[in-house]
Length: 346
Image 1 (cartoon, one colour):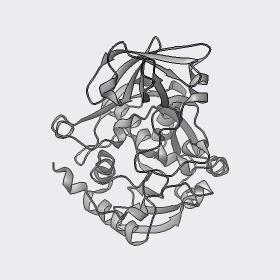
Image 2 (tube, one colour):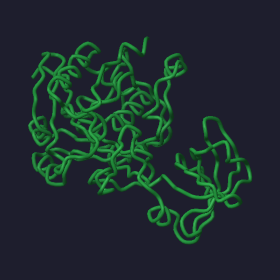
Image 3 (cartoon, helix red, strand yellow):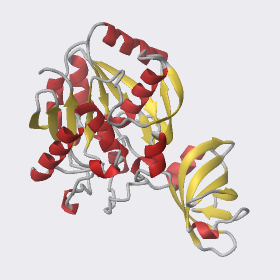
């Protein structure tokens, strides 16, 4: 499969640099690949897509303020660390800049010195294992010293850090936001629930691999970067009931999809409480197990996320939808507009 088949040309001015004042005021392109229809709406209209008995599945991960600026203890040279993965025992896998200066044994101090770190191992592509030393609670120290790691295509300063969090974010651990959920307000979620829809939460901690270009190895092995997920027994039971009564499981975003389809693939289409690491790569030809419809943002060209959406709705239809969005001046990527994709005769 050629990655270039999932490419498209996007004018830079359509890359949203800031969020809209109102989360649910973003535009919504409603797509039905069976009928071929494309409807231009607003996100608050997503309420029309739910019926009593359906489930809306949300990823409740919270983005860590994972970018740290410090100085090397001996030379006082500037160092930037991006925390990627908690390895336990105060050891984190980090992306270091400039990495060439960060040798094993190198010590770094952050802020007023209440957070320190030492390089204990070197990896490829700027990856370092860092052992952190601090007083108090690590997440509280990180909240006071760290910055939100915005995607590389966003160049403007974010005035309110909470706008890169969903309104239901609670489980700390992501390096990037599950951006499909940024459009939901508490009021909209209340209205969806009042319609008789089950609101179900799961957790998938988003890794920076979500922004990486696909490699030949990804295509050859049909595997992606791994991310931690968790689905509780209570959530699994609710979703089983929804399926058993013939209602729809509607996922918010590709991270919720990855979790549900990982579990569906692992347990032969059954919805079972589970946690672990997933490297699932959903591409055209994949047989969907759990998800009936979803909302998602407009993704970067030639990425696994475009391939995921194409596997659900068809490559040609999705690329037509992207071209429609470009013509209609939709806003793209993390702070951009959304699409709702359903696969039904309606």
